[in-house]
Length: 64
Image (cartoon, rainbow, N blue to C red; front, side, top):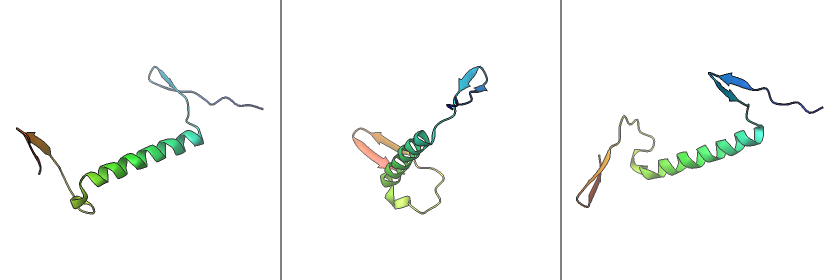
């Protein structure tokens, strides 16, 4: 017996539940993205940070 996934309505948009394989694929993508972001500012790893701003001015780049 083949069951169809139950569709849930969110407002006026139908949303189908995700499969286990799709959850794993999404988890891997999120994990890779977070690791990439953590490598961006290694000096703040493990610290509580409220805000990091970046900017550039006439070829000079800075992180504050």
